[in-house]
Amino acid sequence: MKPLSLLRVAILASSILVAGQVCAKTLVYCSEASPETFTPMTSTADSTMDAAAKTIFNRLVEFKPGSTEIGPALAESWDVSPDGKTYTFHLRHGVKFQSSAHFTPTRNFGADDVLYTFNRQRDPNNPYHKLGNGSYEMFAAAGLGSMIDRIEKDDDNTVRFTLNAPNVTFLSGIALDAMSILSLEQTQKMVAAGTPELIDREPVGTGPFVLQAYVADNQIRYAANQDYWGGAPKIDTLVFAITPEPTTRVERLKANECQVAALPPPSSVADLKSDPDIDVHQIEGQNVGVLGFNVEHKPFGDVRVRTALAKAIDRKAIVEAVYQGTGRLAGSMVPPAQLGAIKDAAIDYDPEAARKLLKEAGYESGLSISLWAMPVSRPYNPNARRMAEMIQADWAAVGVTSAIVSYEWGEYLKRTSAGEHDSFLLGGSSDNGDPDNLLSYMLSCDGVAGGSNRSRWCDKDFDRLLQQGRAESDLAKRAEIYRQAQEIVKTEVPGVPIAHSVVSIPVRKSVLNYVMDPFGRQNFARVDIAE
Image 1 (tube, one colour):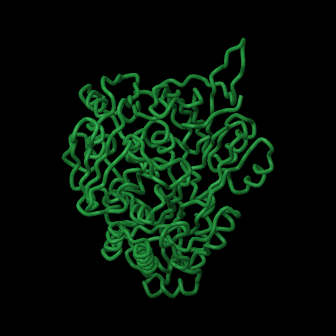
Image 2 (cartoon, helix red, strand yellow):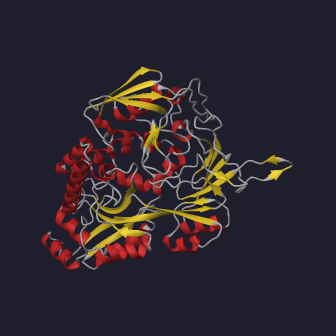
């Protein structure tokens, strides 16, 4: 099926009075990349979560705007059993699913949709498990598969989750954007019609905006969901103008061709702050930019090689050149704002020690590897190509030759998930503010099978600590568990933490009620435009 045709959109930032009538309000967001899909559960990219999870869908519970505190969403309340193993969710009544070109719902949201959404991901024998790409990285990385024992429907508006053991990460896990609730009825009808691909192309959720049209690498157009259970949005039309080049996003923002822009280059932040028509929202990012090693590819199975390559790179110089004042040198894989973060779990720059380790490992005469660099700017890495070039030069200084490899963003994620790379640049923004999230996503054994652990590193002691951290409710004890986990990462070096960035989002002052998300995502449900 060809993409839906895209109507030309007037780039209009505010309401205009014409003959006593208020014209429709349009807000344009200059986004950084096309979404991988419109089905959040099969994706990991922020571009998908912004374009789908935050606009079209909802979760059972969600983080309150601008906060890491969990609040009600499609579940208006929930009860927890005394033993901490059973969560009973009381679903919101009268919530309507959206319609699409090929689907009109005949019923409201209910328990069957919750069971479908979670069982599709957790049960390989579920009839819908292999739809889309059949990969559920976030579900696996969050440990939800091993965490959940069973899910039961008490009635159309009550769902009960029983866990195998008490787990303090459960609520934050199901609040992840990837846990957005899909329509069982749409899936049944699309599969019966022989068009299951329409589930990903023509999504129907319960969220604030309805997808109208999409042209890959160009634009996404949405209309306000007038039936939204949380109240219809203030803006009538939302447009994602897909603009991969950061400097072009800045130019378009200044020209009022978009009113909100993703991730300006660090060199532009000061200029944007001086613009009287623009506010720059900033937050200390709960993120980490990482250089990772695929331990399944020779010679990265040898910890001496991994350690040598880590010691060979001048992380301080990289942070200064790439982040230009908008990032700090990473002490570990856990961002400083999170529980158990430590400042000294990264390997220091020591090229002479790197040469000695390479010699010990049998690579005194040289080594040739690939270094993969993503093609888009991300909150945790504003310029992966520049970072790769600096790493390439540092490695060359110790006798290691590296070829820089890149692909289109969706293809890059797919290929690195499949383990095609030697070394790679990526990272992550926390989805829930808990240290378990990034550590599990990037480094757990479940993450190897799920495809999120692109280092392909599985350490039983590390995984045991993750399990302990999920079960421990005492914050001091949890912090110590995660400190121990970070020490294992420092010793085994599946990857190198580079930096934690300050996330900057420039917004024109005509935009009202914009709230910056602590996890770097975009939510326009409550945004308005000044008349």
